Image 1 (cartoon, protein in one colour):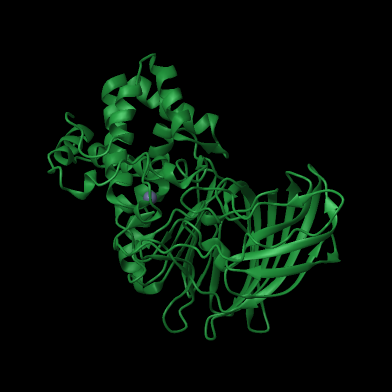
Image 2: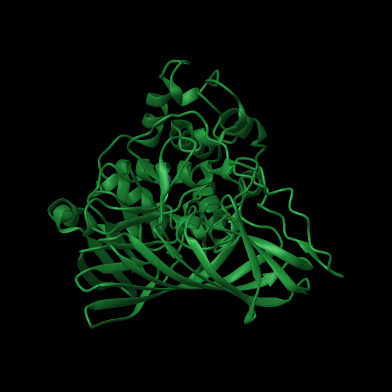
Length: 464
Ligand SMILES: [Zn+2]
């Protein structure tokens, strides 16, 4: 993510009341999956007891009325004997839920859709959940005052759909914590003249009776927060870069500023591939809307989403996230520096390779900031509060930690670490502890003091 408008606000805490008190039905086997994946910073996000292998979403959106109709089919596997489970879903009306074709009882409690099974599902079994739903989606306001999720654009422009950290639940029922990654088919029907853009490859599009339907397929595992289905009257460009299909969708009002930057996308992907290893996905692109009030860009998988024409650094940043965040995904939000520190460091390297300051000079320049600067307001390895997740230290001090690592181990080991990291955790997950262990193993050095200082110590380190 790239924040342009970082707002601070009093932390909003999810209402937990009502979620924990429901009595489990008396069934011979199985218990209800936990309400939440247990993330210390977002305890109710995600759901225990199941893994979603694949989402098939069929959506219809009407920009004029902002009404969304949806059908979600989740192919899931039980990770315990289940008598019921929750899915994340905020707002929207649920009309009907079936499990393996049988209508089941459901309830709503805060941002949860609670499903009770007539017949328990045993640990390791595959099952299918189908949810019919609809209504007017509303974004969620996060602890830092920004909002995410399905965001209608002013007038009848369309919608900006970005879900970090918890907004996926505003437009489809999901296991919304990044610990669960799934493949996706997203089909969206919109009035003729609009384009609906999701992740991955566009399989088909057709227009009939004044409505256009776009069928998208994401074949690589994806965290729910990286899914999109943005809608607009876009200027679309499709082309091949080597063997990679590229699809860009740009609001005409941003076209003049965006096109020149987006023309650099193949060069950025190629340059980042030389540093980070092969590009992880089977498609690429960008979505550019025209609403700078949103204030951020997000690395939606294969096709980052920008609230206005990006500058080149932002393009480099969101593209780097395709490796760091999208292919290699965090398991807890407190590890966010593994996304933002790395994407910021990619910007530093790009600038240095194109006549700008060296990463060492950037490190020194930042280190010169006084101890009272917000750069030192929390250690990036442990933000401690949800409101801090996308604060300056996660980005800049995270990148400083990487430059410190590079200076400690040398270029050969450093770039070896980056490539092994993206290869060994490709399409999966990574933790800060695993990154530290890999760095020590590749370099043969004791790096514990370095990571303790740059990731975990409060305040400004005593020396650079
Ligand atoms: Zn970012």
